[in-house]
Image (cartoon, rainbow, N blue to C red):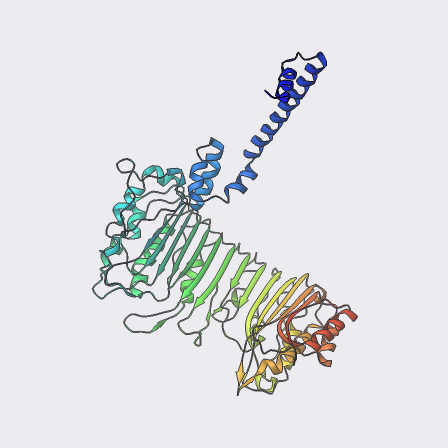
Length: 564
């Protein structure tokens, strides 16, 4: 034995003094206290909901299944993530999941809260168009039995979201599912019908006659029903419209309906409806090939029972955007607050813009499919509403010479005197005439300046246009900007207004001319100006920065520079 080990053993075996014993007990006590504090801190951290949510958010589905076995808290937290990540796919391309017990699929029932059923034909003859019979689709002949195996009564109670995506023809029919199974916790249903094709031999009459009433959906709050415009008109009218109406009839507590279709459901059963988004889809009659357009009387009938409605959005999908036929829509909605018309050149609503028809209206947003300039606002020159405080306008402006145009500017501050928030979004196009003086554009901007705005925003987007090989924005972009600034300088709410010029065209050049300097100085009290996406020479960029700094202007420039 070495001398070192001998001395070490003697020291270890020697009796401790009283002071040594006290020191050793003190060190052990401190060590225990440290370990206890460390354990308590670790436990607190691993049970803190914010920390667990952060950690579990990075885990994949397999790991989440594992951590659920640790404790009840972890199991509950992991389940919420699995409910968002988990997915069950039923397909005929492979064998279905093997059941753990007869009639039961091997997954936790607590995780079934959202289900998406994607119906597509994968029959050997199907390419772009499926010609399988409507009632016997090749790819889905066994889907009905799988669906029945999946949805036991316990699972129905937990389901909150149900999504259907339909491609081509399908089986089982959705109405069979909605008639057979009860979903008491269901809050959201989305039906997306895409590219359904029918053969001449397909007879939908028996299917529609068998539609019958659906199971009640007292908890349903949201219904999305979106139909592709390329659908066969028979399928739309005979089946999908009946399907949509059937859902509306059993959803008395429905709060939002988002409908893209060419039919008009009766919304009378939905007495708590708060928001409707309706987009009409033009279509051609299957036999006559005539275009079936929007029916003003049907729109009015659809909305006349919606006294609870607070938000309404009306849109339009024409067969040919070059042919737009306007209709006058007159409705009375006593509780409507937000009205959005995304095809204002189709829906002519000026007769409804008054405090009698829409007494609670405060937010109005309109945009136009086709217009030559801001004279389209003349449609509202005879309307009057004292309650509108927020007014948004969007359109594509075709700038022509003022002599050819001949339209006078329309002042709307007297029509809607309470407006204190105004947003204008313009897509700027130049006409074929190369000689422009832009006086009409200036006058149009001046006509919108009568409001004492708390918030104003003007967004001008330049889209490309060429004529005779000349990029018009390369020549005229700066002149358009000067006309806009000259029209804005007299706005009463200029100090609370932001202005943004943005170019999609690489050829559009920003030129710091004397006229541009004068226009920017005339609008120096504006809230802020952003000039983005334009071409700018390096020398111009430097001069512009100096000009902004010397005059203390609120201008942000983000453009592409180049050296000649």
